[in-house]
Length: 212
Length: 212
Image (cartoon, rainbow over all chains, first blue to last red; front, side):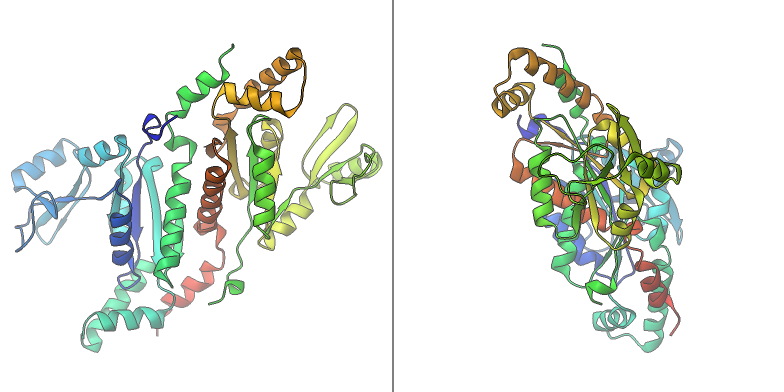
């Protein structure tokens, strides 16, 4: 039996963790490695920034359209941030899952909580932790040359994010990107072998146990 | 932080599937590859057969001792089969799990159901399917030169076993042992990254988010 005869249901891979834990590097590597994985694209009512492409970085919508979609329950989650609306269009995600593609969400704990409208069985929630507080601080300092005050503010935000680690299925301490990628590959391979993600098995087993 | 400072809780890996699906080959390969995995050893009141070693193939107990253990709730499951008692001693499994070793159970759907006394969170249930009915029959015929009547009886038993596939977390269609081993390795690696299997994270995160 060929793989194309075994359609799988895709999954929603949620990567959360404090900034500085290494989520972005891992997300990029996943997307370049897995051709059947795509980054979730949000819709927003804010104006495009220079270089931002509609349908790639965001779906740019006017407020009337956004409100109408929200009313029609066409978002998996949406929120208003500083006067602009942001949301995850349900249809694009559902289409990907049905076609056997995974959708990656690089979001914080609040975004992850808001995805509660998605089917729980589609969600694979992974929390990325830094190896130590010192390492986290060093990574944040390296990232740019902020004053100590800004670093402290970021460390506080990191602590707040980390305090939500208990809401995730898997936890990876990202000491080494290669090792963390191995963990993520194993998680994806295992999740694909879950009974619930192999709907083709229903027919397969029916054929297997039919009388001669 | 070294691995030895990250004690994990072991898991109970249940492999079920019809005879001829390839469970035994996969079990042997797992046990030879994973030094921190051991095969569950049952207790029984039946007499040892030639070559059977107490504490290796079975724990051989007299009936009074077995009944006393059953009364003291010292078995994860037990059953009487043709006048002899069989059971899984709870203490040995619990000790392995606490020490971070996995315990492999090569058992049928009835044995798996009876393990309900174990903590559900310790169980990782994998069902192994043959690639086709024809392949299953060919494997059973190859195994020994039984008459057609015995083969048919075995095929019926296989169908009965297969009909319980829906009670398992993971399903692997064993077309190729190497591919199935890859799936099992991924399942083990992913399950070890589950939050609930990394109890050391509680202290780790507490240290991570403590104020300066």
